[in-house]
Image (cartoon, rainbow, N blue to C red):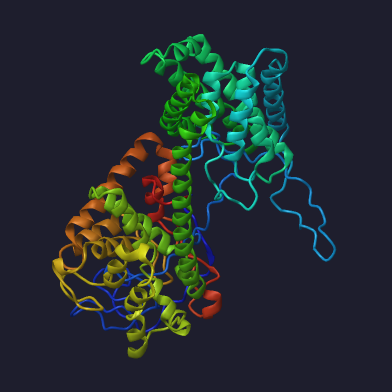
Length: 571
């Protein structure tokens, strides 16, 4: 289905000249090519294939992920290893102390489906059964206590003062895997229980789930190691054979934890099986093998007489590395939040362009990937595409929202937005690579663009990428004065203007990427692709509609269907 956004079509301005959708015409206060149209503008922010940015009528800018709220126990990040599924119901709101307002009821708070409750209950019962034999069996309780305390200290929420950053390293899996190699299965199942129940200020149902599914995973890992004579190999120092039971124990732990968490995701959140089991498992295998090696080293040193010292000495460096990784991820998340806030500010100031920035960022990343750029460069171009119009925050709102033609002064103000954007991002070090594209994305290869009239190779490569992505999204978005172009027509127009307005390699990269992707999608799911790529009907145009009502219905986006198929635009 082609996504649409609320809003009414903007009335076409009278007195304009040239085809607004043609690369040779002008739009929105952007200068037309030499000898082109008369220079009048339809609406600020509109765009054609000249690379001018324009309104999109897509479904709106994307905000923070609205994921299911459940995370797999063996997520692909490899940093933390295991986190809670968010299926169990939250604790009821409790009124605070005198003068404190009670917690308002959360709209998202809801009871688990019956099948999910059964799943959680079954896993908790299995955890109890796994650990139950420990009190009556001869187990080294000193080892259990030391590992359990060390594990608990690694759990966020156990130590006061929030010593761990959010999404940090708990549970600390090398400690659990060392326990699986050193202890009988029932005792190994107990190592994670105290820390899981004490950590994380979440409802007790979630704590019990965490403790139970980790206990079951540790029990199965310990049993697998014993079936391969892992404890005997460790006591004898039989290397490299001891690597085998350690690796098998880590893999069994990974598979068990992923299977249990996936079951909750499927029953509680109705996640597809591939998303609940396949993807998390593939992403977690490598990290868990690494954890297994660390657990093996800890167990070997423990049995060589180093005891508690080994338990702290070996996992500690890995804990610090994971903690630093979590902090780096927090910084990255803060950067992404900053970008989203800036884009949202632009969307609020000029609602007609809502969603345009996100799509240009994703299309820029698609082009960069097709050109073989490295991951860091692709991400920088994605940010450049998202923020290419951030300078419109410095343009008067009356100019951005004007529905009629722009006069010379208003056109001059519009054309200042690249320089405004360049200055606004000057102090953000993580956007250094994007600033050149923000400043020069309206330059043209023949030198007729702005703000500096650069030509050819003098235009930064990043700006040439964003210019193509910007024009493609503009042409495949419905405007009040024309319907969205079909994808093939938009690509043909880009190809026609390659060498004068756009850099031919960038245009060719976009054409290759979209052509290959849509061909694959058509072969695999013909009916879905046909529905996705079919041009949407243009919204009805009401010539006398007032400017305020003109934005009550948004534009549909044909090109977004192709980018959805390419995996760079969310549906």
